Length: 175
Image (cartoon, rainbow, N blue to C red; front, side, top):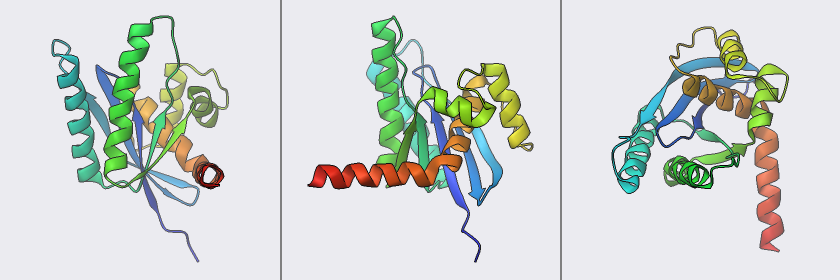
């Protein structure tokens, strides 16, 4: 009996540009569905910008109907304000699929890179090249889109383990 194809949205959160990519995983076979960017008005107030990101992601989720979502975990950098703003954008990226009833998995950047490129320290160009190799029909115009597709690919590879870990954590906290 063949496993049913699963549609996955990968999200690369950012306050200015949030990349998104949708793939279908059917066993080990991956198919490109779509990708793009959700942008916010750089001149707008923070609350308005976060609303733009949230509404953009809700529209994409409504259009493409993914069954699972994957988001890259935030890395902490030296600029605390930038990290905080990225965290707020990431909050919108987590909220949109969660409110749609979609399971959300999170992956550290080095796990995404290692899954897609074979090394945990691959650069943007290397990620884009491997995404193009793994999804030959993919068309993307930015590193943010390539990263989002890489996150979706990572989830397709690790999804069974990710859900088992999440289920175990829920059971442990319920005790």
